[in-house]
Image 1 (tube, rainbow, N blue to C red):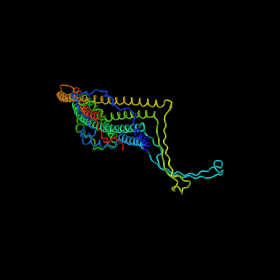
Image 2: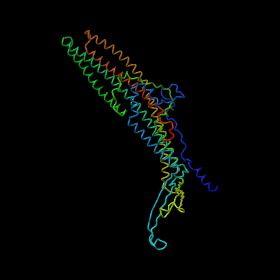
Image 3: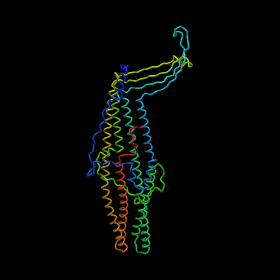
Image 4: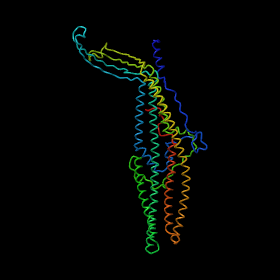
Length: 472
């Protein structure tokens, strides 16, 4: 009895061993510190994507983001892809364990004279009921386990893609909301400018009729009115486009109660300070997805290596067998079968070596894609940090420009009314002032959008499950 147990113990010892190479994370292909990080903290961590409400404090924006997370179709597809990947993983994992099944078979056939023992034709009946293991591969060299690991990492990569999509939806909704607010404020500015220009034009027409103003003054004033009217029409179109884009992100039409009253009415986006180490980028969902795909490619090498070794399968069943249905469960009808099989590759025309080479190449491709994802992330953070400093300086300068032009406009208007200068001076200043105010609105939007970008490119932990080690 002890001698018989030795092969079984050996099988159990060998089963589950893996031929996959030990996974090693590639070195960071970027500098250790992020740009503008004067003193990177050793304990720095990525921005948590689950805390987007802290970053985006505006109540209307939060409501729209929540609706987008519930109704966005891209995110819905990403969630369904995760469910499909989880099912595929469970299918692959089930191959590690023996399956059990039941079968009932009944047949009758005629034995011809020349095939019978007594030279007489006869009809034979055969009925059976059995339960057992249809076919189970004993995973001696870890082929099935490697395929299971590859499926697991593909599932985890899909879940990270879902998390990246969720992060993109949050950021895109916030940016679209801000763009709508900025265009709404620009439209209000254009309408007020049109009203002021129209009032000035009417006064100049009256002055021309009284012989005070000239036709040139009247036409110059009219040019301001038409230019402002064109700006209003353009911005009204932009506003409708912004509303359509926001509705597409949310997944349903956005009511007027959710629309912003202007950029100044939106609560500012929280600032995200630099000073982080580059390795926090490894917590980004897109980089985690690339790393899981690298791990899956690494596991596939183990399956390709195991294909060079014998494959052991087992089929076993037990039941009853009888020539008549009525005596199927009677005494003397018990039957069983036990059929282990070993298949060893001898010659496959180079297919096994080619398959191993293909899996190794796939791993190298996955390494390159993983490193590219890190480099792309580093570039995105670098660009966002560089843009933040430039935008702050530009906004400060344009604010000074607006203040200066407002005073210049006051003086030019006074000189025209006093008859010192022509209306051309007022025209030039008014156009410059309107352009500067519009530019200032654009810069304020760009600053807020830059904070959203920093949140997106630095966000790490997502709302994925804590027990991601399983797909159940």
